Each structure stands twice: as C-alpha cells, then as structure tokens.
Image 1 (cartoon, rainbow, N blue to C red):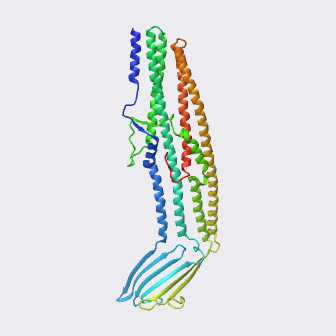
Image 2 (cartoon, rainbow, N blue to C red):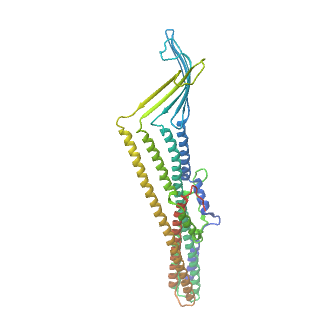
Length: 473
C-alpha cells in the first residue's frame, strides 16, 4: 500500500509541474504580423524615407533652373565730389537648352565715371547661347535627369530591401509557429503518458502487471516532461526573436507577453495548395522587370548621362552673347539688331591637349561596360536563385508526402502495439519504442513543412520584387 501511495504522489507532482498557458491568450496571425512589420518596423519606415529623400533630390536639381533676381546699390563720395551713384536690378533666366536670358535696369550718375559707362537709366535685355559645348547637353540638365533616374533606382532598391525584411520576418514567424507546435506535441505526449502511467498503476494494483512496468512508465513520462520543458524554452526563445519585428505606431517596441501564441498552424496552411500558382506567376515574369535588375538598368542610364556630359568637354566652349540697350526716356527700336544700342561678344575656350576631357570620357565609357557586366551577373544570379527555390519547393513537397505516409504507418503500429499490450501480448517497452518513432516522425514533418514554407517565402518575396507594390495574401 505504501508503494502504491508513492506512485500516486508522483503522479500528482507531475500534474502540478506541467506548465501550460492561461486562458487569456493573444493569438497573432501571419497577415496581422506582416502588416505590423510593413507599417511600423523602423527599417521599413527608413526605406520609405529614402524614397522621400530621392524626391527631394529632384527638387534640388530643378533649383538649377530657377530664375535669379539680383539687385545692387552704391555710392562713392570723396571731398564733396560724388564719384558715382548707382542702382541696379536684374533677372537671369536659365533655360533647358543651355540658353540663358537676362534683363536689367540700371541707373548711374556721378562726376568720375568711366568713359564706357552710361549716365541715367538704362534698360538691357540679353541672351547667351552656347554654340558647341553645353548646347546639346550641360551639367544642369544632367543633374536633373540623374536625380529623376536616382529616384527610380531608390524605389527599386527599397523594394528589394523591404521585401528582404518581410521575408526575414515571415520566416521568423513560421519558426515561431514550429516551436509552438513542437511544444504542443510534447505537451500532448506528456498527457498521454500520464494516462498510461495511471493505467499501469491500476493494472499493477489488480496484479495484472509487474511493478517494473510502473517504473518504466514513470521514466518514460519524466523523459517526455524534460522534452516538454525544453520545447517550451525553445518557444519562449522564438517569441523573443519574433519581438524584434513587433513595433507600435509610435516606433516603440511592442511589449510581448507570455500569452502571445500564433493562430496559424504548419499542418493547415494555404501555401500547401497554391504554390503551383506562385510558380506560374514567377515563370510569367521576365528578369528585366525584377527590381534588382531594374536598379542596374537605371544605374546604367545615370552612367550614360555622365558619358554624354563628359562628351561635351571634348567640344570647344564657344559662347555667343547679345545685349540690347535702351536709355530711359528714349523710344526703343529692336531691329535691326546690330544697328544701334547693342553689345555682342563671342568667347572661345579650348584646352590644347584635352587630356583630362579624353580621360574623363574614357572612364565614363568603362563604367558603362562595368555596369553591363553587373546586369548580366545579377540576371544570371537571380535566375539561379529562382530555379533553386523552385527545386526546393518541389523536393520538400515530395518529402512531406512521404513523411506523412511514414507517420501514418507509425500511428498504425502504435495502435496495434497498444491493442496487443491490452491483451497481454506485448510490453510497455515496445509501446514506448513505437511512440518515440511516431514523435520523431511528427517532428520530422514539422521540420519539412517549415523548410517548405521558407523556400516558398523566398520565391514569393522574389516574385513581389517584380511589381512596384507588395500585396500581402
């Protein structure tokens, strides 16, 4: 009787030591989790800021075409003699094709003026036209064009970076789900073994089983309880890792509680049935539309812009300027342009050897060649990755099918062994052995399903890079 009481006490201790979640649990779905990451994660917010910075760069480049208003006033008097008194206001207007328009009004008076100066009020309208260098292309046009291209580059880059963040986050979510299901599996196994121990103790009391069977049942239970505790620890660790991706709207880390559990299951998942649709979508895309390849394509356009700009340095700088003048209070007559009240100039500049210009142009062409190699390599790398992901999906799906059949066989063997044990034709050792095999098979399926989902996610987020926006399923 004393031995029987000791077994009952051990059972009660095991029951009280069993850790479980409370009734107040918070369930987190995959879509809810991904929405939190996309909207509130600091890195996702940072990537959106990069796009806004690129937009500001375009505005900055447009500033080179802003009209410039200038004004000046001054006076010089020495020993009662007014050398000069001047007032001037002018407006310069740069245009897209390198032509600059300008106009001004100036008033000048004094007793010590230069012979070339004109007293009184004077209106001026002028134009400066590049005849060779900067006529077809110049730095202002290049900077604006490059800023617009850089914005598209940034959008492509941030699309890739955001999707990489989403991929890491979703894989962490499924790793969390796997650890939770392993814990559930161990908890169910412990409960089953508690019932088995109670049954063995009862049959021992009726004299149908040997005392050693109770010891074996208890040892098996304690072993599973250790496995359960370890599974719980791994789940808590996975929860902590998941918390890296959980943020609130004000960019504060979300406080993760012990009651947070996933609402998804590895066993029941939509990806099991729609992976063929994803494969078809990926096959329908061309690699040139992928954000990683588009990034290098846009970079090539910037380098081409640099080449065109460097080409201008090989041309002589020939600038023609013309200014029409009209004195205040006099009737104006624009035509003929070179008859009266005008000023024109022709300015020529050209380096003798053009060594710097030729070197700059050669470097610009070589950079274009380098970028072409980057495009070819990135395209091949992307094609190899996609094929690898597809092969992984097919392979893991096949392994899951085989492992599921294997698990069903172990279930039947365990059920048969339990029936034989109830009829006195088997032993507890064989039951424990069958059960261990079944648990190993169940854990193997969970591991394969996780690998399948990770490969599926790699392909899914790679597919998302072909589009400008990511749609969460």
